Image 1 (spheres, protein in one colour):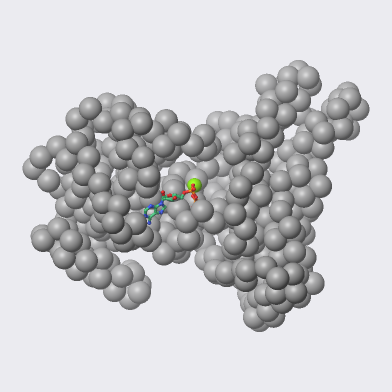
Image 2: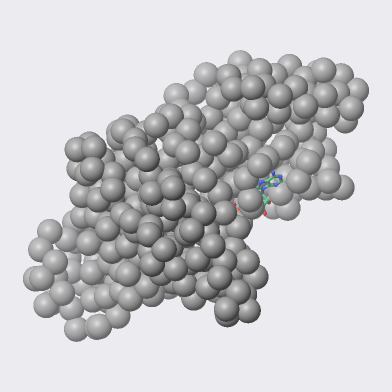
Length: 385
Ligand code: ADP
Ligand code: MG
């Protein structure tokens, strides 16, 4: 364990003791994630390639003798919740506590008996920036509750339980990528996840002198829900028109495009089909140790998301362009679109220059400055203390 993690764990345990007047039984952690490539492929039964961040959500916790879940977060002071486990049902608890209570509910739905517990949550992951703080929270809570309750569940199944918490308890229709990344990623690897089979493979991610810079574009995601639903619907209807179960199954892009009349559907299909190829190409490049070449894949993905899938936003376009002009090997928007973060693959000595270029480009437009974070491929969820 690094000194930084050991110190943070000690601090969280001390804060737990202040909050609950007793020592914690342990500290658990789940990371945020960046999806290196494979955007809007998940609900088309396709491929994604996320890796875990060093940043994430930690939970200090102690079991209780009663059937109550006590929930506090240092990021939501004043919004503590005390939730009876008995009779927990969707709609019962809103706000941030729903993500944690939802995990207890989903474990119960899967037939497991969850014990009462007091939890204190802390995080160094920005929320709503597309780095999946929600799944980090769910998965950290899932590990905590399982261990305190003596429940042993294989991680791919635990990922589905955490996803169910977000889908059915919180009411967010997310795919399986975020929870899989939080639970299954390993240090120095990306996770190639096949969203149809649910099977995953570790792919070495050696950045070899490059830095993966995350640029929080600080743009609010106003349109995201409606636009996300309409993109999903377009993809489903295009797959129907092409006579395939999902766009994942399009094998001949030229033929598929020729058979579609609607130019919007053609653009959507072009993105999804080429994006799956870009994931496969990226895996090939990483296995061949050619990480610098991955930059071109990122930029190609960005252009496809901007021009074919039409989900990028001005702050992301400007950040990617400024980064590439300043020497990044490539970059792209990440997440569903219309707000959130971008990533850039930057030779490490040029990181300062790339950050300055993005700051200047934003300042010239009168925008709020972007925030930066370095993405280091890190281990998945685990017990820290
Ligand atoms: P993302 O997953 O991209 O960060 P989401 O909107 O999916 O964005 O999830 C963010 C939500 O997750 C927050 O609004 C909050 O309800 C919950 N959340 C995440 N981290 C924490 C935390 N440390 N404490 C309390 N709630 C959190
Ligand atoms: Mg989320």
